[in-house]
Image 1 (spheres, rainbow, N blue to C red):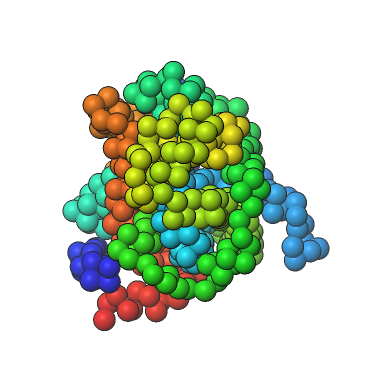
Image 2: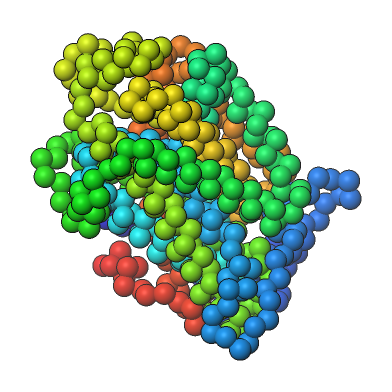
Length: 492
């Protein structure tokens, strides 16, 4: 990984000199001349030239959330509430169907032994999200926009393609998760390929949500996170995992008896948790608050409250992920197919044929996971599991749409309507998924999730290098520059 980072760093090292006040950037043909004391690069214009009858390119930034004045306290819950929103939208990427697949695989393959990997990946993710939020607050631009101004054409296009690949891979996981959820909730009446097609319709329905206002949109995503917490928390309470083993696996970095399968799963956990496009997304979402970037105190305060909000949001997402890992670690670790087959027979499950009559280890995925829960704990557990998966897929759909739009606008300075953007991404994601759903079985469909998690981990350098580089440059961050140790290590 370090070698790959160095190679990419060398590629991007040919970037032109940082923009200064003598060479103001251009945005949509308009030269930006307003400078800021905290950054040597200027934010893009707040408006985009277009015909009056055109559909707005973006509604997320049309409404700025005002920050209440409260000079008497060092900490204000009113201000924290005003800044609450972007962190929870960002945290949804930590709860998408790919993460749920990784969690249950981790529990079924390694028990509680890889919980420390999940904890470490979440902490690293929090630190990276803090850098992303800081970049957006200090510069007034998101990561893709800064890349547009700092990198020459070839590296910029490579970065854009890699991030788009990560977004499409994530969207495929959301399609798979929703299709499986529809199939489970309908007791098989909706085939997998039918569930894939339904995701085309529901995606465009969600596009209308942000027409009702930014805070209502953020509240809706909070509602979906609550559904996931209740659904997977219910499964956790039903199974009652061993709390001692859970804490041991979380805080003692060991993996006794682990082999290649467990090591591969550990890599998959990192890829599922730290998603490259999410760093680009968070740096854009923080621009939705009304902050005077010329006021150092306001910038510092915004960084503080965004970090607190992100910590709370990722703590909740971590708990939900732990729920899933613990359920499958306690109930299904080292279970055999013949044991599960017998249990499904006893419960009159229509899915008994999924588990062959042999003593091989149980292999689970988000589809089999729901079936096994239904066999052991009743149909209610299966339906609640499916509702949780559906909430995970639906919430990730909209954040993926925002990510794609911000990335395309930032890297290419190409403004598309959200409708056109989601049509492009979802069409690319659905085509291979639909082919697998039609011509292969559910095992092949869910098996794509494992591959996509590994793909996400391979895309990480294309987000890590820009965010670590830019937040370590005083010419961009000025007083808010972060530690340069990591960047220097790459350069030596």
